[in-house]
Image (cartoon, rainbow, N blue to C red; front, side, top):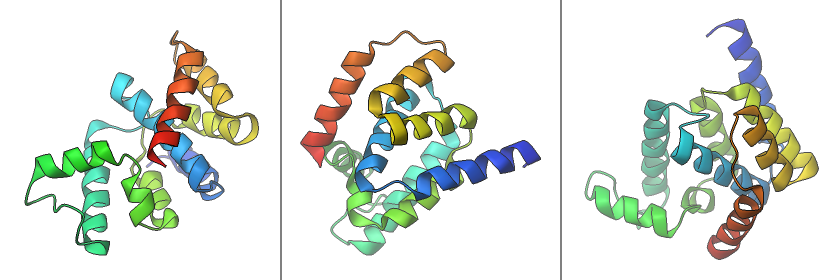
Length: 154
């Protein structure tokens, strides 16, 4: 890991550390939106590895959580039905450390977006990412969908 990446990872860690559960859910919603649509902020392999580790840890803490080795489809369906499952099962500190460890792309952009999320709110974070990454998504729709999603699943 080069010096610039080490510095960015430290900044990422510090931004994650100050998030409470609700702000982390907003951050996670932003992350998932941009990962699903553009593969930003975390490489495919790191996303897969993080997801596997989260699921393994969730099963260790709560045996009612589906075992990823027994039925992959059941795990996937559970994750869709309970998108914030790992935040509810695991300690937030542990979850944040996993995200910090696995995030590996576009770190400068996500760090600034996290600052904006913390200081200015969800809209500012989406606006910044769209501008920084050259996207033209409808910010009003993104904010509304995210707020509804969090309300529905929290």
